Amino acid sequence: MTGIGAEDGPPRRVTIKDVARRAGVSPAAVSLAVNGRPGLSPATRRRVLDAAEALRWAPDPLARTMARRSVTASDAIGVALPGGAGHPASRQLSGDLLAGIAAVLAPGGWSVLPALTDGAAGAPEDRLLTWWQAGRITGAVIADLRIDGAALRWLADAGLPAVVIGRTGPGGPFPVVRTDDEAVADAAVRWLAALGHRHIGYVGGDSPLWLGAARARALRAACARAGLAPPRTVAADPTTGRAARATRALLSAPRPPTAIVHDDSSCAAAGLAVAHEMGVRVPHELSVLAWYDSDLCRLPRPSLTALTCGADTLGGRAARTLLALLHGLPTPEPTGTEGRLRQRNSAGPAAPR
Image (cartoon, rainbow, N blue to C red; front, side):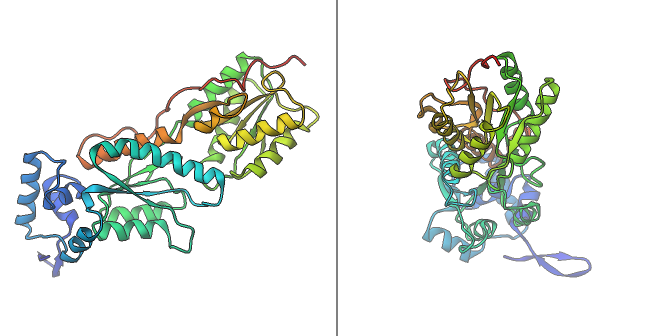
């Protein structure tokens, strides 16, 4: 790599971001062009190569060598997954996300490099940056909420194209894909209220892996707008044991809820098992719901009603957004309701009291 002059100091190194800025494309598009990989129009490829020549820039030979030894950059996408691999809910969430991402990427010949770390292997953003600098990935999908805003800016400054899943606020320099929790909660509460439910419980709220606290706030606001009592929330991280204890606490109250929403499908399945143990008939005396859908919702008897789409749908949408980003196409708005209420057999009219 050669440098470009500066008026007030020594020449600085030309970077891939300089080339991308001059050509009006993303850094990933520069990588595709200089490595001769498909995915760009002839005109865009020519514009990138002309910009690189004008700036006298070439990829780092070491990075290109490392890329050839493993997976070429244009063939792989890094995915930073939620931590806590020991939790069944975390494994399920990560698996669903990967399934949705791979379903979109595989037909185009892309592979996926999961960055699921447990602390001993280092921070997930470090792994993504290492892969990017070595030319092993072309972009990333970030679903690990441990990667904070400062780390996101750090990755963006390195030129990594990425899409973020699941943040309540902006993803900083990256597009964000998530469900609109307030719209989902409103639709669910209106549906439950129409079935006669006046007392709703919520199991979740302090999940480090997903957005339980945001969902609890959205559900509380929706109940207020519908004129219902505030939902009784029992905090529980996404483990089936804590979810079972939380459901038992709600059902043991002097005035138990007639419907309980759980953070995810595994917690809802645990809550359903507790209801069976306590002799509470579902859905005749209690409606049990999961916030996110998954294959697990179809397995219990009765099958579990879910409020919105599964993580696989979010993963697929994130993959499509990243592909649009890599090819210089418009990306979707940061928020948007995914899917609709999945009505199954675990929810029904409230029993008269």
